Length: 456
Image (spheres, rainbow, N blue to C red):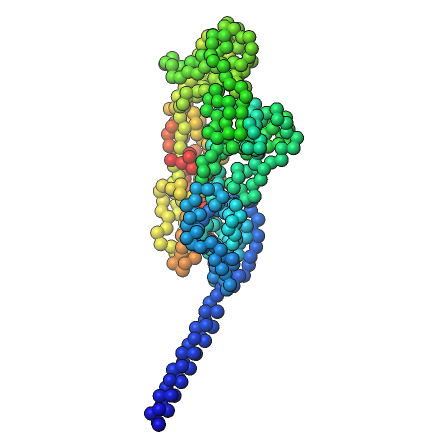
């Protein structure tokens, strides 16, 4: 009997112990759930909040670690969206939430509105991270050789948009109210959809500037005989060249050797050989001087600008002197590193600074000043223009972590005095040197993308 009682007590205590363990475990799990401490609307420009999935995190109805969060798009789905070739699968971030665990969650929606919810975004709001990264939904493209005098081929099939469809959230068709079927349009911008590669032009109605937007442009305007491209048409093909309507343009280098040629053909009526070309224009709406300047052989620049066409006549040759052109690039160098009181593994060292480490910017005037006659010394005034084109300070694009786990980044300060001194003997085509001081700062790095085509 005592033996039976002992067994009963032992089993009872075991069950009680198991029950107690279950209660404690349940309580700990509930306590470990994160809580949202803030959830606010993002205020930056919409195009700055275009993101794409990295495929590492799912989307939830609430921040994923918060009680009650349900899966909206699984990790497997997000991997597919990360590898998608469709603009519809980009996302727009529009809210950001923080939890008491230090995590950041962005509320996002696909461009087509199919998926919407919260996705893990790292530990800082300085830059998108975790399950999403910044996306450039459009890529700059080459402008057409002809930019004016286009008409819409079929406004019902290819009309104007506020942005190419799905490259911006809620991109929509432009109202064509006030536009006539005979209106002509001017192209001012060109871009391709980054994922699909399809070409679009931004056009403005020449008779009504209120009507403007992006239109599909097919393969783009390739030559003067092309009359239709996507949603645009010139309506006029360039005629065949004859002695009565054309001028051959021959480009000569410093040794008077021919380095290229082009043929100007006018669309003017009743011209004949020997007539002065004067202000007559071609199918692209360009006069002879503009045509000659725009048709330069690759790698050459005009010796004298503008091109003189005062004696040009139909049926004859216009000789244009050119010089070899060259464009310098700039190498980025760290001349000093200041880590302050931070302790990190593998800190930045002096020497070459990779373009992937920093979002260095250079304005358009400075980039233009990098080009000149091949081998010719770069004037000090041009070096000053280049130096003044740098942003004085900018954040690095790489996040480091201190030994305690806090995110830090380098801030770079440009040294304009050293730039003009280091490059005083440089010629066009040489690689120029730009020096920076790197200082370690609190917080994660920026992911701002910049044009790095000028960086060596």
